Image 1 (cartoon, rainbow, N blue to C red):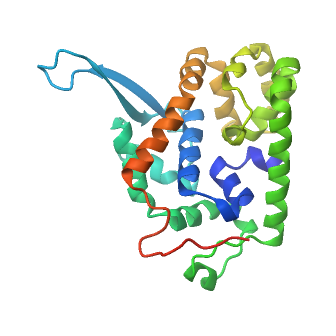
Image 2: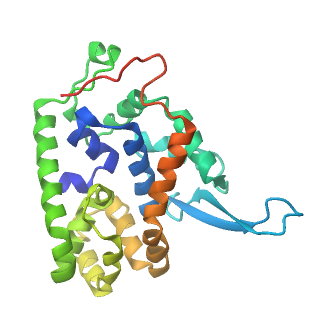
Image 3: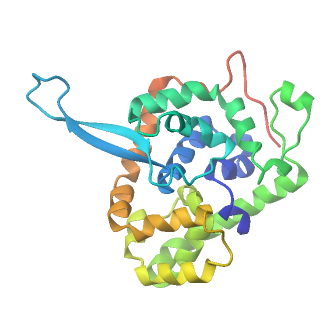
Length: 269
């Protein structure tokens, strides 16, 4: 399904689960997708909280990744990347980073508007002053159809992915690369199993898709994670911890599910 190679997890959720989309999920999977593409990275530093402190403590920071300069962010990703645009060398404490993006997003309606304004999915949502005034997020008929097709396709992959990783790694890899960061929306994907994929298959995929994808497309960012053994291990070994940490810091920040002054978020068709 070609569109899944072109849209981020947040865009996918907005089309697929339009009537039940949550701000935490939209932001969490945007963050994880940027990590996967090495646009941002997590850096752990051991240091003393105070010079007289006898113990070293581990502090987690968010920093600009190796692909930051080459990456063109989508509208909903800019709040995650703007600090590094201003100061590329800045290191932001993880909890402060989550609090900052929560404060910057101005609630779910603002984040939805930003996400659905992206070129790839904008045609699938109705646009009108009245809908915007009442903060109603409505899909077009094509949008509803696409949402159902995406849901069915991801469910199909979810049902097959474990079997494929054990029995047909080439097909498994092709499916995973073609959906990019949307792998986070799969419920049955064992990220540790991805380490067993033969590196030779990666080269086959690169040759096979070299004519179909631009050299600076997201597909190339995704395949890099598989090529770098150290990056792959450090990333996927801590994925559950990172997801849990995001949830925890998001909740602590008091990030609102609605815009200020909004009694309830708009419904969706």
